[in-house]
Amino acid sequence: MLSSYLAHLAVERGLSANTLASYRRDLRRYVEHLRSRGLETFAQVAEADVVAFLAALREGDEDHPALVASSAARAVSAVRGLHRFAVREGVAGHDPAHEVRPPRQLRRLPKAISVAEVERLIAACGPDDSPLALRNRALLEVLYGTGARISEAVGLAVDDVPTGPARDRDGDHGHEQDQVRLRGKGGRTRVVPLGRFARQALDAYLVRARPRLAAHGRGTPALFLNARGGRLTRQGAWEVLQAAAERAGLSGVSPHMLRHSFATHLLDGGADVRVVQELLGHASVTTTQVYTLVTVDKLREVYAAAHPRALH
Image (cartoon, rainbow, N blue to C red):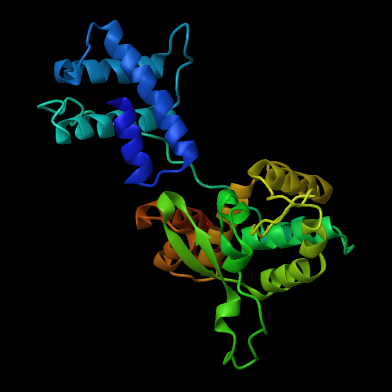
């Protein structure tokens, strides 16, 4: 039953390999929990059994550390989906997890770095025109310029970034050259505009660096290559960012922080939250609205500093 559900998630829902691995781990632990309570079939499970599993997740035991709210919520979501699937497949006649709610998570504001810090970070890739420096600069420009997840960036193929003459000053030609096609969660594809700095960095990389890197490999359609000519991995991209951050004197910078910065700077510049939602590839605007809390704080600071009646 468990393998059938995981296959359903992979084929029908298109979940990523990382998400599937997390679900598999959570659900195996759930099955062990049910067996420890003497339950061998899903038809035997009651709501109290599901609630007890949630409590065990939060408390931990000798074999498992206590999970934070976000991890416990993910596990409960996996369990709820499993029981819905069991009912739909006729394995069970009722859904004992229907009323069990995941633990409430504290709403954490995303961290962002300033525009000046982003510029320092990208400049820290180095002024030289070596293949790796050109690649690193293009990678960071794409991450910040499109708000791409790191998996989306390293998953890009050359064909996802159309090449050709740049658009003219009146914007009449080459519109397709100023965009990039990203493949996000659940297999969803979105087209995101490509800014001038990212476009120039990519052009320099594609013309002067990628062919030299590709010569060391066996041929791959991947856009970003490592020193051996193969696809740059997520870990490799992370190391590129960490090295640049260290040289720029910035701490705690992550690929996701660049994504947060992309969204925050857009909203600070007056972008509509639903536009930012589309650019980030969020399925729901609720996910995007957390960024508005950041900009409200900035508005409050500006108001307190500028309005003559703001002082208390």
